[in-house]
Image 1: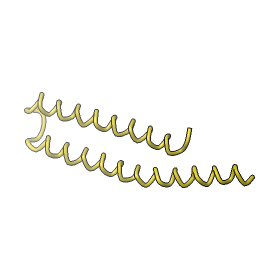
Image 2: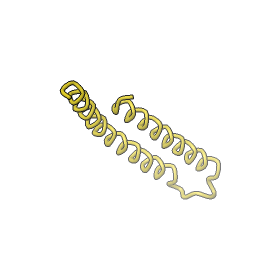
Image 3: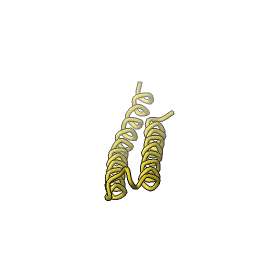
Length: 80
């Protein structure tokens, strides 16, 4: 399996886990309004959105690094 594929698979898995956590926290806040702060939904949305966006940005960079490493490995196999 290429490095690009591994990066994409791991990004999808981690993003799905973060989305699941976001969903859980949002439902928890709705189900227990007396146990959370008044701005709980806003804070959870901002925090999880920032975390998912940062991971996606990092994943974008990692994808291109993995693509470059795949090309280098393919060239190395052809030459040696």
